[in-house]
Length: 115
Image 1 (cartoon, rainbow, N blue to C red):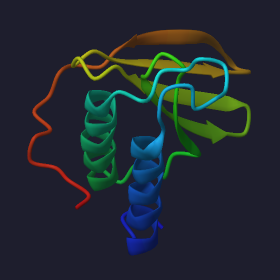
Image 2: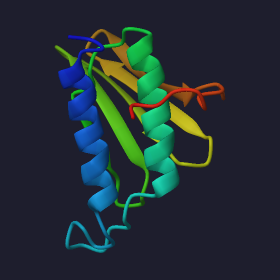
Image 3: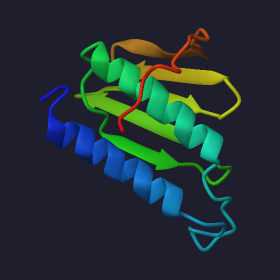
């Protein structure tokens, strides 16, 4: 359920796990998730929750320290990558459409928080 306590709790737990990762968390030299990327993802996803977006299927760190949120619906896939620098990119793909990507506009997300 969108905006439910359990959804918010799961999202907070995912961010807590990301904050707990250290360098080489994958055993292959991955960087720890950037704290700025985690904070940026938390702000954006909180904003999306408030806009009644569905829960992301996955939230995880890339080996370069960025954070990614992914949604899947059948053969359609959507993801947002948070760099921690204010540059937030997205990608969408599916069986009935070509893969497209772009940048999200910078918005003031300072008022949002899961805490």
